[in-house]
Length: 450
Ligand SMILES: [Zn+2]
Image (cartoon, rainbow, N blue to C red; front, side):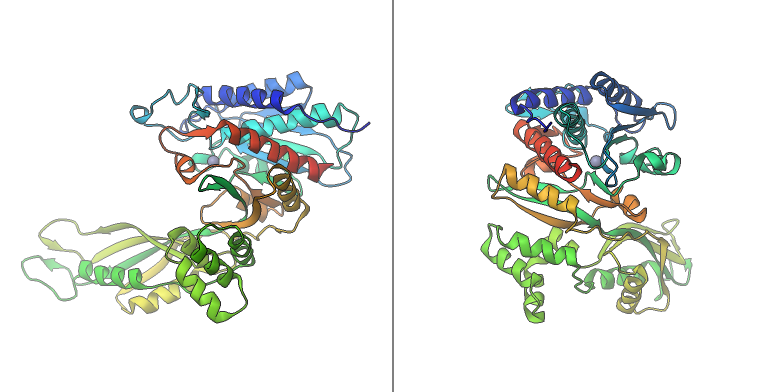
């Protein structure tokens, strides 16, 4: 028997109902209370005859792992989403953030974008695979594993890390599909899908200036606060060198073909070229846009300043904290060496006080990446699918360190305005986008697992 085709209009309503139900369960983290969402999911899978396991890693926290068995010819594909959400400033919302209200073609609610929309799309994907492939007598070449986890928004102690540590056999696979990408609408048209296959690594660097202490009534030339100020000015003026990864080159090369701004499109093609002068020229243009600049070089952001004890004492020490984000394969020590050279002061120390862990990039020519691209093309041939280096950190790094190929998507076509509501007020997802995203995930998972 061959797989049957889903009735997409019925699916549309069903996915929306799941998304609404998920939003209506308040899982603001802390405390999370994801166990209630976990029980909801367990109920949905039980009713559909899909094998699932429910865990309670800590009181009130939850994890659900469901599985559709394949022939075992290939390794499993894992689709994951987190159940917790960030808090709300209720007075700035025009609707109940936990009401799951539909208004003007949008579903409103905390988590609509991050990450209950994808959770609903993933649930729907499991239900459709069960109905239209397994129950229709078809076979899957690999297991399809659904993971819903907790605590992603607050450190992840009870999330994917917990599952990997306690139930590795349940979540192990060749590929994983996670949050972390973008599906972008620009000037009203869905333009591209950015699939995150690698990410920057976050570190903390502390800068400490030393100087003579004393009574504030006698000004001292070597004042540590002023010394720190000069060091900060030097670091602010410093620019990290351009460093292109294979992902960044492919990202700009493919985006240049559809990018609406002509000057930026030319700069993208320049950066992706093999000609050094063109690369430098393109990087100068793109570097004016902070989000582009952040993928072209290591990022150095000042985040905390501390110094002094009272208003009439010159302190002997003043410190500033930097968040440094290196590109994959780049050493944070090399960044610190360059910053020291820029500061050029023996009484200013720079030290890596928290060191992030690098992870290998996932292959953007793998069957999983190809399946995502084909699924998108089927839905909208005008869109391009590009690999993407994210500046933010995700759970996918953990999976990549563990040897899995992990890909981050946000499968819902949205413009910048809607996307910026993620973690903000009046978070909402266009109903059309929720439907598109469900079809995109189903299409990708079916293709890679069939
Ligand atoms: Zn998220």
